[in-house]
Image (tube, rainbow, N blue to C red; front, top):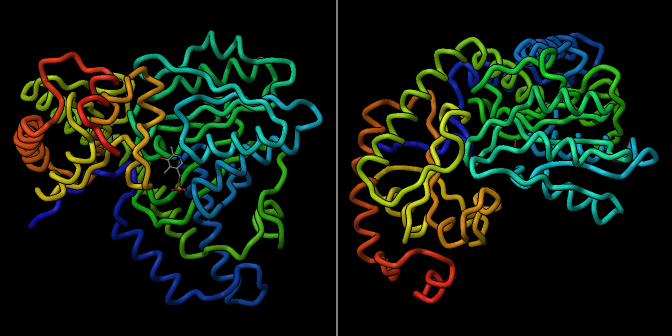
Length: 401
Ligand SMILES: *Cc1c(COP(=O)(O)O)cnc(C)c1O
């Protein structure tokens, strides 16, 4: 049976051109880029080409791009590296309640080490308030980290405006742009960001490959200590094949950005409109317009996201639920709770993220299947569909973990 992959926010398939670059390095360029003989010099060229491709994709200088082992590492480095470097100045960090766990868990770790973290709330659409941000910045604030676009509900934060506020206060600004990169234009010269994280596998590149943009002049402690790689800032023999592949993926992403995002947006809106028109008691999570072109996030009343996922899988469709069931926990998503959904409603969430290979026929099939699946699951639901939903009702109705 044909599979329809609608989980591009989780990861993307490798682009054939990226695969070609990657396998060429693996097969033919085994040198260590730190070696001065020709095998080393030869592969070093690929690493530096990739650095140029990434720099160009976000309008940075090549000396501002540092390769890491993942988007998570880039996030960890930005937060821990800035915190450690500036701990004598202050120990206050500002972030949001809807960050990726790579940011949230890093901040929680620093809290155990005496740092104080303000987690800004968001409105019903997932947007932070600029007034809240202004009010939260203190004399001892050393870092603000606010994601560019949310991975669950797709909301795009006003990064430029945030950057202006943070810069005016003389505080360092980091943004997790892992979801935004390749989907919306990013220009670090225009944005007033000091640090920016990206990841290869979200843009049709390989897994285990990320990068951190560090603006020239921003001082940061190292996270990985050892050799002198990455201008003495990130030790470890370079993942040469991964780096070259990431460079290619970044190049392709920006060349085709406008065309791709238009394609995603058309299918996104078709999916949203189709589902909202054909299925009752469904809500769209996230902002109606300030959202990633390929992101669709729904909550269906009276059913659980996990049951929808299993039924979709049987129908050949790969999607994701807001609750972190895949990680072995049934806690409702912190993002859905932050936008104000009761836990019972947040349990019925479904995220469908569209990619460049998704077709209109795929979307039509998904809508058709969803109509049938939701109706069937609601018939089986232990929750009385005539009762207004709230947590108590949900729990009393025999909801078990
Ligand atoms: C995927 C993701 C990450 C983590 O990137 P990895 O390369 O998978 O470690 C961080 N932040 C956001 C917003 C993401 O979507």
